[in-house]
Image (tube, rainbow, N blue to C red; front, side, top):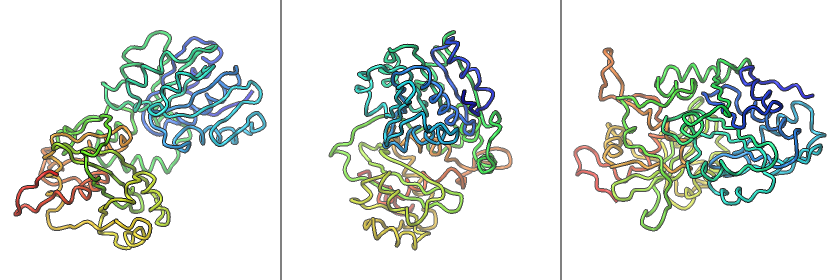
Amino acid sequence: MIKFEYPEKLHPSFVNITTNQHDVIVWEGGRGGAKSEALACIAITESFIDDGVILCCREIQKSINDSLYATIVSAISKYKIESYFKILQNEITNLVTGAKFIFAGLKSNITNIKSINKLRVVLTDEAENITQNSWDYLRPTPRYGMVRVYVVFNPRFETDPTWQEFIVKNDDKTLHITINWKDNPWFPESLNNQRLRDMRGDAGRYSWIWEGKFLKISDNSILAKKLRSLDFTLDESFGDPLIGIDWGFSVDPTAIIESYVKNETLYIRRAGSKVGLELDDTADWLEKHVPSVKKFTSRADCARPETISKVKKDIPLIKGCIKWKGSVEDGVVVLQSFKEIIIHPDADCCYAELAAYSYRTDKHGEPTTDIEDANNHYADALRYAIEPLVKRKNEPKVRFL
């Protein structure tokens, strides 16, 4: 019997594997609750119950590195049970039962998932990003032996499909557990330092990221009312991309955004950010998240000319942005002038920060015209991207491409 370590609050989920009282298990809450690590332990436990396929999935999986694969492999090593498993590059098999783990993104594989033979268990990580279309396909799919679906997510909006599907519509066959960083006895100091840092920023974003509360839109938000998450397909009518890059420092992330302008609407197709990105790895990382950065002009924060010079060897069309007194405010005016800012599901990582980008408040709690120096990494990258559209205040009004 393997003695896994996991937060006590999740114990009923492990008991349920033998009691079979619930066929849907929902873990929801903020960052730091050890949900992904515990899900790997659940996956391993399920693999010893019976054969069949255990599907580990999320809405978008660009590579195996975006999946639970590494977490499961790490758990197998940690508990010294390597002899029970055959681990391949994209697949893991339990040699005792024959149970097989496969890893897939729902968006690009949903029709293939419908045809998986002996699908017995479904584990969904980052399920807040799963669309209604994916759930409509996925829910009826498991059909072999004892069926269980695990749904792990950090709630974003009450209207999101995952919340509606598994919390609003839940029944006595659903086990619902809320878990946050406070419930994790192994909560690391490094994460706690980041939590405390976030606590000093936007309160709504902190509550969403760390406490698992719904993302609330502040009255001071600059862009929130413009944002909408929507799938879209690029064609020639979108024109060339507008790409912006904001460099990270010791604790701030490097951020990149690929955007397009069409019919007075700003479309964000791809985005990514990473803290602690090494300079030697920067060009490869930028190209991985936004492949078009090799073919089209990108504009980066000019405060780091040495970084631009280094990256330019691999990304020749990168250039420093132009700054002037009031350039931030002028860029914000353009962003606010769009009818909508549409964010593709592939770029969903930028939604929360763009929604939290806000004006400062005065001592009475009233909004000012000064922009808060926080939650601005994606917003800065977006401002740099749309630089060709921005005119100084004393110049003619911006015209849309």
